[in-house]
Image (tube, rainbow, N blue to C red; front, side):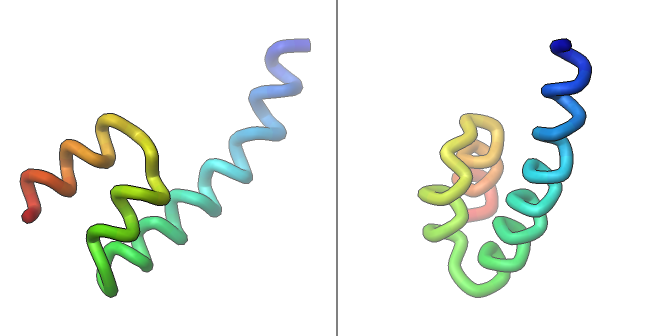
Amino acid sequence: MHKMNNKHTHPLSTISFITLYYINDSQRSVVSFTAGNKVEVKHLVIAL
């Protein structure tokens, strides 16, 4: 059951990641807010 659920979330995660990356090119600030991930935010801080 857990495996099945994970598979369904995988595609969604990929789309979100691509969108975040695309927005990053335009505005890093937007990515930080949209990402909401500690890892993503940390990376943004370093880039800034």
